[in-house]
Image 1 (tube, one colour):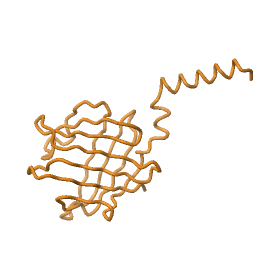
Image 2 (cartoon, helix red, strand yellow):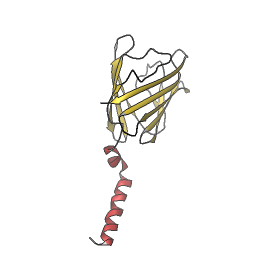
Image 3 (spheres, one colour):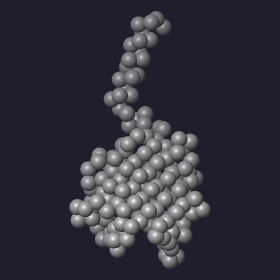
Amino acid sequence: MNRRTTIVLTGMTLLAIAAFPQASFAQSDPWLGTWQLNLAKSKYSPGPPPKSQTAKIEAEGQNHKVTVTGIDAAGKPTSGGFTRIFDGVSHAAANPNNPLFDAASITRVDSNTVIISRTKAGKLVQTVTTGVAQDGKTMTISTTGIDANGRPINDISVLDKQ
């Protein structure tokens, strides 16, 4: 292959990656997979923590479909799901009867960091910063703000990739 052909092919490859970033990004998205709550490394204030929790994250175009199941602090099964839409625009919560928040905006800061701003009646009530470690094995979710009763919360959930 001559130099000109190499340059043209390289340019076409770079153009394809720039034009269709989701195709190349989806292959290396560190968020995708099943994540298990590690209670020993997590801290809940004021608490109590759930007894268990599993999150499954799947690609949905450039966004994420998140399905969460678990057992709450009282021993009752829990389940829910939502789609992370990474556009920084406020979207209604998946559960319209959620006592904590009624809308959230999600921004993907970089490939390993997401910031979620949760609002209730237009007022910011919680900020959630979520990050996946560079090795892709641990996810840390830091939630600050207030709960449904107006009490301050400061939770750190650590999840291990399964």
